[in-house]
Image (cartoon, rainbow, N blue to C red; front, top):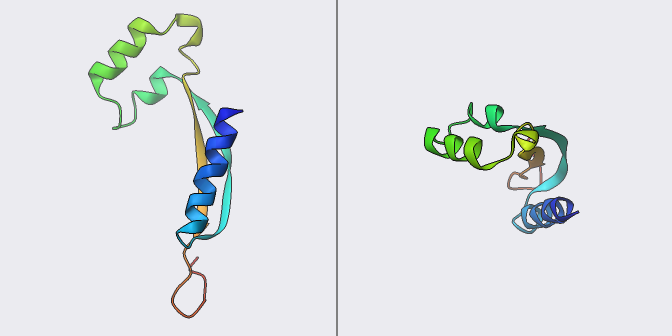
Length: 80
């Protein structure tokens, strides 16, 4: 439930800054090993996650969400 609220708030913020056609979807859970492939997480952070998150929860530590939006060009046309 809190994730859905955060997604809605994020979408509203995009709209307030001028984006249109905001779409939120494409939810995909990912685990520690998926996170290890992303440059956002350092080796040290991954090791802390492996040590502190129980094994039965390591396959789903977060959910990736795809958000798409368009920014209108000047004059009203929407960029694709």
